Length: 259
Image (spheres, rainbow, N blue to C red):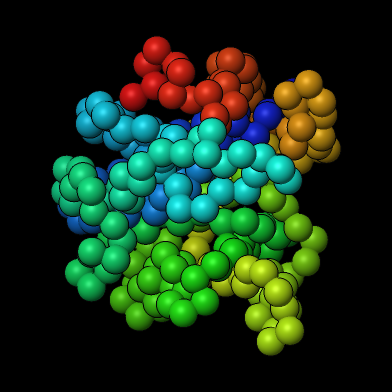
């Protein structure tokens, strides 16, 4: 076993690379529509996908979100960006400025929606997302019926720092009670991709969560154990070491090659 520590931003980059290489994503980039719903983790997914098709110029991770969790007392105005829309590609071409609501009626079997989450149960590989729009359910309310009703593929990138021990369906029911103040939760019927699945998708090695936490920028970090055959483990080691310089989310656009 080889062991590695990943900060949340390193984990987001790893997940972004993995989802961009997912077989269903690769297929839909040739024929069909891919919808990457705006979110901080999905910003990394969108960046990696757009790089893969040579269309990353002008994309910014900073504004690619609808909501954001920040520390108490944080000045959200310091990271305020104009919302650019979701990233939607049809037959591999980026349809700039579009949102999921613009294409939801046209999505069919074979199309793919990528939607982030706020909680994940690792044992059941089941995720849930907070819902602030109590009238329509927001982007999650648009995405979930597509899976059951039309056979659209839903991929859910979510970092290990969002792991919870509770059953997601039970937690969603609890947060839907009439006396609950704050956000609700919607369980997502999609394929979960955490850092663990990302390692497997990209290298063939197996990743196991060993622990977490840290200070000095490693708050929320996870400790992974990598096992498997020698070649996949070496590939995983090279990949994870390459992520070591990944800056925090709020410094992504300071990178010289951010787009």
